[in-house]
Image (cartoon, rainbow, N blue to C red; front, side, top):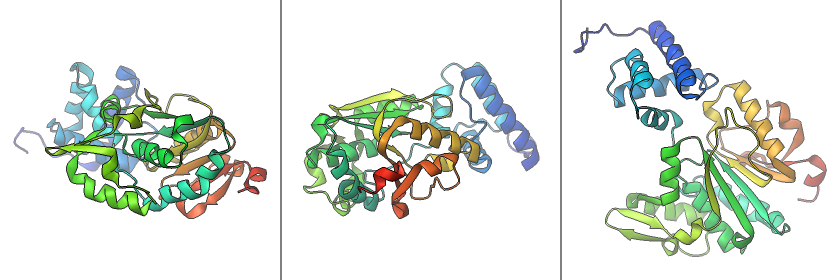
Length: 287
């Protein structure tokens, strides 16, 4: 027994508890995690029992059902809002060099950053668009189902210890200034220039349950699909296809792919290695 007088869980019992937890989360609060990748979900739920000191998943479920204000930390732990500015710099360089010249042909540019987490990639996009002279005619819709993450994204305040890595990423992505031009640092925090927010709408959107969000010329959703089951990935990729204008671009995480998805036939690779695709084969001939 542990110090709570409880027998240690075995894997089979944990699976039962997690199934009940997922069902409670959906019935009590309307968040459906039933189609998340089982191994990844189990790992995060067990991490929650540790970080929230509930001892067992069953006690986690009890608090989720009965304790006001307990949902927010649960969603924070389940949504894994981890990112950095200009993460995978080669991807941002490819967007700058291969996608932006096409976007420049549109009088108004709509970009949907799905699963924006704490907003680091949203501000990365805003900086690149600013340097490309496109930002004043761009609207970025930055969405996530995690309200806590959205709030931090709107504030644009991050630990200053990240600045060195982010500056290296920015230059590797083809940045034409210095990243320090876009933030002010004080004590142990840095605050991004609030002018970068001027064309960003932060909004709650759940990829599991919600429908088409906007008509976009570029959709970015990076390192989110890896947490979904295959059927849910297929649904979300269909949602992205239906959100794009013909000839619009889709950018996924470097560990993600649409090869298996039913919507794959509608896309052609722009840079397959960096997971950048374009909707519509005929339009691809112009790239």
